[in-house]
Image 1 (cartoon, rainbow, N blue to C red):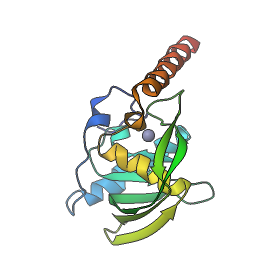
Image 2 (spheres, rainbow, N blue to C red; image 1 turned 90 degrees about the horizontal axis):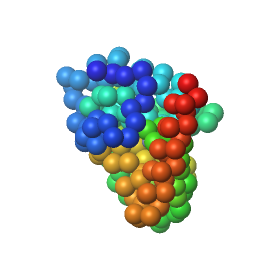
Image 3 (cartoon, rainbow, N blue to C red; image 1 turned 135 degrees about the vertical axis):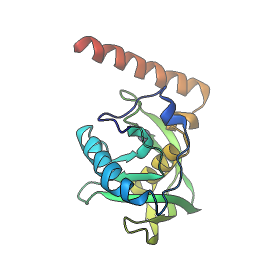
Image 4 (cartoon, helix red, strand yellow; image 1 turned 45 degrees about the horizontal axis):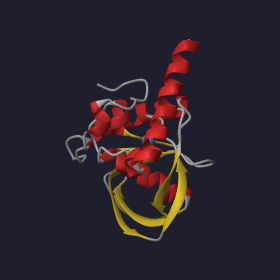
Length: 170
Ligand SMILES: [Zn+2]
C-alpha cells in the first residue's frame, strides 16, 4: 500500500530491505510507484526518496537535484568508492534534525533505467552522497545508523522535540 506521506522513523517499512525490480514488477514500479514517489518527494521538499519511504518494497529511488529533471534508479549497486568526506545530512523520515555523516565523495553507480537498461555513471559531491543515503534506505538503513551513540541520541531527541512541537501547532 503506497502512502501519500513519507513514513517516519519507527515504521517497519524503513527497516525492511527492498527486493529487486524484475520484468514482472517493472510496469507497476514505473506506472504506480515512481510517480507517487516524485509527487511525495516534491510535496515534502526533498531531493531524494526511496520506495520504502512510501511503503513500497522495491529497489528503486528517485533524485531531483536542483536544476535537473527527476531521475529514477532501479536495482542500484554502488561499485567503486573514493575517500570519505563529512556531510551534514537530514532525512524526510526523521524531520527536524540533522547530523554529520561520513560519506564517499565519489562513486560509481550501476542501475537500471526506466526501460530496464543497465547504466553505469560516475558521480561526485552532493549527488554521490544523496545516492549513498538512498541506497542505505533500500537496505533498511538510516543515516543515524552511521552515528556514534551520543550524536545519535542528540539527533533523535531533536527529532522528538520537533514532532511534539509540530503536533501542538496543528
Ligand atoms: Zn532519507
